[in-house]
Amino acid sequence: MLSDRRAHTTLPSSDVDALRPFYEEVLGFTPRVVLTGAVMYDAGAGTVFAISRTGIPSSGSHTQMAFTVPDVEAEVAALRARGVVLEDYETPKTEGGIATIGAGRAAWFKDPQGNLLAVIQFFEPV
Image 1 (tube, rainbow, N blue to C red):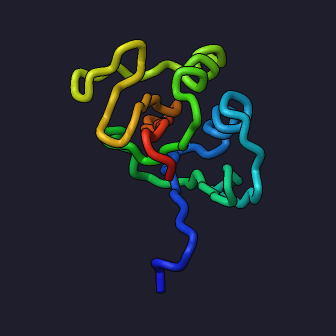
Image 2: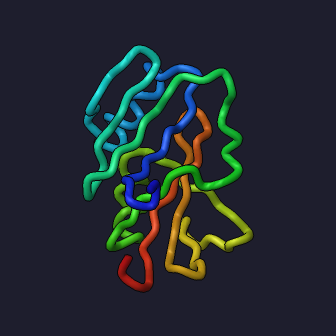
């Protein structure tokens, strides 16, 4: 059953080669597999994600991928130090780039092609 399988996300990109420096140089990921029109990356705890060529741009209107972090404030500071711009929202209200949501504290940012990413520190261990 699918409930027993590892899940991953695939982020759309109109130009995979142009997007790679953001994930590799800014966020620090190393490619696991490079294919024509797609790159797969390893993330923590055995997870993976991909960026893949598509003709349909991201809407950036919802979180497409989130990273669980132990200290959201430290992660936000590290992202800002690398030039990442955090999103500001009224709902949920962000203060200093961070919002308190039902499950914890989170911050959002977009990659250069508009994919909306998040970092979240959960109140309860997950």
